[in-house]
Image (cartoon, rainbow, N blue to C red):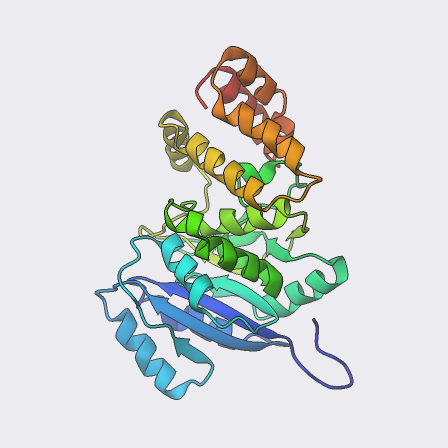
Length: 314
């Protein structure tokens, strides 16, 4: 909750920082996190087998910065998402809010405090936002994610970059329970951690807000795991994933995850969506294509996904 005007108590936020060969960007990112105003920040960092001195630099910083705690690595995770999953599992469970942090961005000073206020005012368990992408030559552009949410958008897209997320304690607890469940430990979780948290919240009947005010300066470089998804090159890359059925495979997985946490109100609709996503016959394709307006937030994307589904490409 926001700071009490009489007690002066600030909301405690655990920032989960996943790193891998990010030594060149980390100083600027960590400074922007520790400089957040109006909140009490504690950073929990886990390095994923870096070879550029990232782990050593973090250890040096933690020796003099009490707000930075290193989560010891228990082996290479293999991906940024897997690293974040381990952070969710291993970070302390007693903070009011949690935030994901990439190693190469810059946070606006009021990012966390503004999202805490939105969380309380709107009674939501997750807040994310637009971002401002920037390139090494200084070019900036708005990455817009705050199109109106749709009934099943959480099965096909995240509510923005995970680096913008602020999540409630109970949402992180739900994610931790999911990741620690016997069923999950024998299967592969979604390839993007931001998708997972959005699915868990929405399918469980909890609300999420996507804010239009950018709170992260989103660095674009050749080592991005997931860039800003703008431009022709990004569109070609996404189309390739569609053709390879990767995107549909993730949707199948996310639908099953949604069903595992769904409340009774949402379960019947999700079961129907599961049938449509699993099947490839003509009737199922056109039934799913007719629901395109429920699957993506951006109007242009709704038309594109409808055409891809109807043509049998998705």
